[in-house]
Image (cartoon, rainbow, N blue to C red):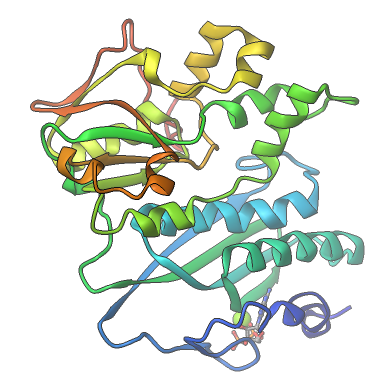
Length: 314
Ligand code: ADP
Ligand code: MG
């Protein structure tokens, strides 16, 4: 199977399935074409996943297909952007029809679930590596940045935290328990908070998606905004499944430090909190407030969490 046959068989069928109106031209030409609606801005981001680093060697290709797009789409959620399309640069050691079949199936499901249409890509041979660029749109000036948090804002997170981190201990489980299965699902099939991000546009003062751990990612908001935060660790939404599997203390540590959950951490001005629609407010938990100064206080014996650093010693 040659490169073009591979693209035709496994990736061309994904084009057109989410009918992104602003994608004028998809795969097949030298470039894709996207029409950005007047008054909107294009929001884009690129992510690379390398086998052995970002996912285990021999990782289930259907999970990989879903996960790679979910992880990339999560950055759009953090900006409050409406998803439009993505490109895929795929480097493969070999053209295995079985692997490609499963990978493209996972990718296709994610593409439809997130409303992100495959616009094009590149296919090369080498160590398994995936690079996905996602495109979204916001009304001009409407993107939620990391730098907008201000003193007295609430610090909030969506969902529950620590499940994907706990899952790392069960990746090889032969017959996982119900709780183990629940956390594994979080790791294999994260769901980016795209609707929440869009709903928070114009209301949240800052946002980030939690890929490296709450403390690390909140730290990025605080640094960009030139403020600090006071957290109440008892308010952090730990997962009950993780608490049962690992105990309360470890569940909290994972909620604070572990990555891969792809929930949102947002700052919301107190005035805006009351005007949040119920459907938005119920997705968020207030875990503290923004204060003057820098860094995070309130977490006793706070673990030094810089997040994952590819070139760090951690
Ligand atoms: P070029 O040589 O101009 O870079 P390519 O031969 O790399 O073109 O790609 C031909 C077409 O196939 C392009 O439109 C490109 O977007 C598309 N394409 C290549 N790889 C993929 C892929 N993995 N998924 C989707 N489209 C792809
Ligand atoms: Mg090419």
